Length: 231
Image (tube, rainbow, N blue to C red):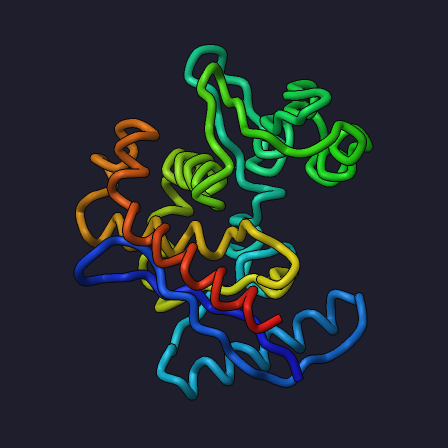
């Protein structure tokens, strides 16, 4: 058995997403087929909880939309020079450490190569993010990742238009005990903002985005504190 979250967009009240922890049968093994068996178990259990349509967002998804929405594949295009790179390389290449960074050359690399670049482990503690002249703090924990991912999603209109029909989102690789950022979480926030007709205002600036989601991030911080106390 295993526990993984699914992220449900808030469709009323404060924009954001609810994290629902689901206990389900886990199929061990690194093969893609094993991951997909676990995804099927997770979604079947979620359906029993009332979430009929859950989209897996990862390279292991059986649905093409979910694969395209993986941060390893989703592209962001710069307005000035029309340069393209993935959300993953944007995230990794924006990290600023106590002894180095940001390593902007990662923007042009393969997503997996960028994530495994040795400099990310040998440059000291992570201090902040810098993305095209803008500095982003480490808190709220998922603020920068959510901002980059949702801006990238909005640029991919064909993908963005399809996600609104789903009740929730999962990422089988995401374990909240080991990781912080999650693409399924970002998509759930996007849907919440979209259906609440607050997307354009939120993406007006990083400050607008943070103000719009301040209550969501406050709740996220409380939940992390509760989970840490249980470990």
